[in-house]
Amino acid sequence: MEDISDVEIIAPNFKRRLSGVTSTIIQLVPVQRALGQKVATLGPGLPEALPHIGYGALLKLWARPRGRRLRVWHARRNVEMLPAVFLRDVLRMRLKIVFTSASQRKHSGWTKFLVRRMDAVIATSNRTAAYLDVPSTTIMHGIDTQRFFPATDKAAAKTVLGLPADRKIAGCFGRVRHQKGTDLFVDSMISLLPQRPDWIAIIAGRATPAHVAFENDLKDKVKRAGLADRILFVGEHTNIPEWYRALDLFIAPQRWEGFGLTPLEAMATQVPVVATDVGAFSELLSTGKDETGILIPANELAAMTDAAALLMDDPQRARLAGERGLARAIESFSIRGEASSIGAVYERLLSGA
Image 1 (cartoon, rainbow, N blue to C red):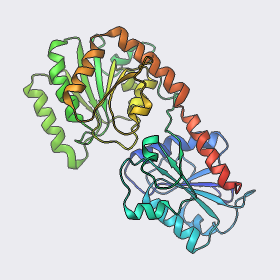
Image 2 (cartoon, rainbow, N blue to C red; image 1 turned 120 degrees about the vertical axis):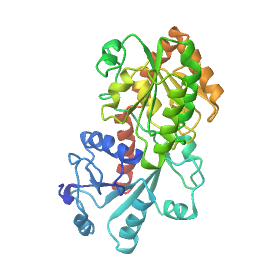
Image 3 (tube, rainbow, N blue to C red; image 1 turned 135 degrees about the vertical axis):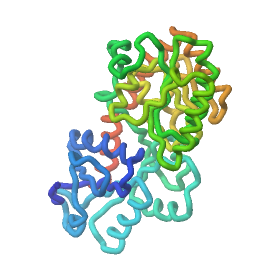
Image 4 (cartoon, rainbow, N blue to C red; image 1 turned 180 degrees about the vertical axis):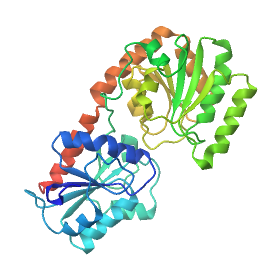
């Protein structure tokens, strides 16, 4: 438990179940601390290793932290903005509030009400910023290249996971559900694999109880196509970077996404990408002369199938796209760069600028 006197930034997480926001906090806070940002988390659902304060520490927010006039509260959900507004405006505690928005849809009246009361707003992409009615700073999510990096031996990377070393592998990672487009990936592989005996496909991710029937329908469809030994549902894994390193092609088939880190994780492991034009994918991928992958319209199975075929059937194009993706991830999307940019927002507020 951290001494609240030494905490300048509070990062609340008021949702127990693992989500993209929770994952962001887990990955970002250690990097922020390494950069000298005095951040501590608050709330459930986070690893014990993260610096943490208890709810009782909130009673001490009237007092200044050491060497500063105030603290920053960094909210990422409505449920985290609301208590901060109460602490600052009703209880008159020494707080400034930052909100990070990843949403790419029109905000509700309640969300707009809360956002207008923020001292600073961060958008995770330019597309997200366009949905905000207040000034914002665009800071895109970064990738931890200490965790996500290319395989030095692709065959060995496959073998260690029990996958065939002599096959090429197309992958789709994330929650198994309609919104994530898992069915589009499965349908595209059912179409492509019979003509490509050297390829298999894997789906890594969990179906929550509400989506188990959806997953079972997909498994039944794969069995009926006679491809149960080539389209594999491998479940959820904590060692997901190792699964990326086994891939030869990554497909992000989402129908909707707030930001979406999976294409970036694939790029950092030197894997070419096919991604739908949702979330921040169009800002992550390069599709011109420095191609890192192919961007396709959302919810269009034929486009996904054609794009995957192009990279499956052209090893040179796939290799170059993977190499460029790695370079782009390192140069433009490091998690250290994200943490530094967020730190600059904090500093403006902490210094009263």
